[in-house]
Length: 156
Image 1: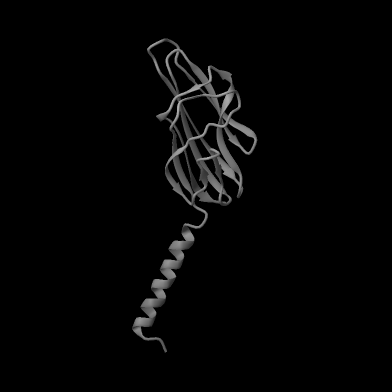
Image 2: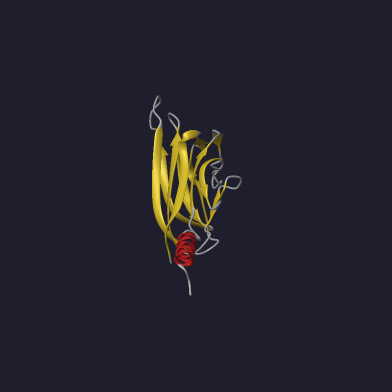
C-alpha cells in the first residue's frame, strides 16, 4: 500500500516525464549574418551569429538546419542589399529550391530588404538552408539586416 507521500512523488515523476516527452524533437533557432560579403551564385549564406539554437539543430559553420525529427516546420529569412544593388536568394530543402525572394534597392541612397516565410513538412535529418540565387549583384549586408530563423510547429 502506498502512502500519501508515495502518490505525490509518483505523480510528480509522471508529470516531469510527460513534460520532457513534449519537448522531444522540438527545435527552434534564430541567427544573423555577421559579415558583409560578395557571394557567387548558388552559395550557401552563413548566418554565423546565433541568438537561439534550441536542440542545436542549426549549424552556424555550415548554415544548415538539420531537422531533428519528422514534423511541420516554419522558416523565415530576410536579406538586405545596399543602395543600387539587388540579390535573389533561395530557401533550400536538401538540394531542392523551395522558394525565392528578391531584395532590390533600385536607386542610390536606398537599402532594400526582402523576407520569405515557408511552412515545410520535413523528415528527420532533412537539411534546410538559404543560398544566393542565380541573379543579382552578389552583395549581402550584415548584422540585423540579414536573418534566418526556424522552428518546429508540430510533430507528424
